[in-house]
Image (cartoon, rainbow, N blue to C red):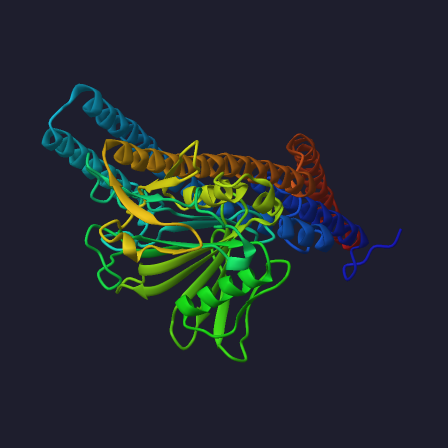
Length: 487
């Protein structure tokens, strides 16, 4: 055995063992204190990178969840107010009906009607949550948005919902009274009204607040021109395109054989986008007018042109054009007996109802009575009818009740949309929560330390550390024993 004061082999070995044990002990203590077996890239670069990616997804899902919660609250607020409005509309119908049967004074009934309409307006205004209102139909007075959007997944897909105008005017009840006026259309009994040889049948209705004009429309009560064109051939499609050009201020609108709309950018410069409902929106550069292309509840193509806006960007004048598809009813032009309303009348009736008007049909003649929708009846001559018979004004409680029923139908549609959107959001929130939980579990499986095992390991390493220190102490004492050789 060789003794040297320059090189203590035993001490070196003991020190190396102590250092290794100290390193392992530090690692174990770190895992116990953090709860992680992989907390830095140096612990395991591949697993660390995977876990960081999963953590980023979890953080993204947290943001998505917050957005969905906000949107759900917006919908909840709107749904509560919509339910209240539906109740008020039912009360309004009862008031008018009882007034008819009990002979109540018109002034008394009208006071009750006006009071109810004010409550409906208050409901629409009160459906505001953090500046978002899905029932007001216009921004301003603390309302910053009438639609809502939220990211629904990590891909970036969005849930979007365009709001509606559930004010009294938006429901077509502006100026409602027991002597409400409507229009009687002799469209059903007009001979040859649906004969192709006379050209496409057109019907145009004007909607406005009482006494309103194209220049006095407001955000809540815009001046609206609603045109219905029975589209059963290429000539009618051309008529629809021409009507769009007239309202939009363009010259190059076209509708293909499949019904697709296009605007020639070489002639009319425009920008295009998609609104919250997924409809195509065209904004004409020269005029600033916008065109929204969509579908009504019957699947008819609709074209809504905004031609005037207020300082907040709310539409105050617009034209709605509906291309009423009647190709499937063509045989009725010749097979129905003279004086009998052809099937196209029903298709037109549906299209008018989809626009928010109340429509009833005479069971014998097929003539239509239109009410509600803020219908302008002060001058029936303003109503355009090409091959659709004559127009006369009618008044009475029945017309008022028809207007209220139309408002109830529109409110039901709004409530149904809010309800289905709420159900969709609930499902999205559940999906996001489930995915976040799965990712969190996955990250834990990859990076979390087994504390029971680390606890046992800590005890072992602490023992090894003590032994290594003792061994080093013994090794260091060997050099002092050399002195005894020189005594």
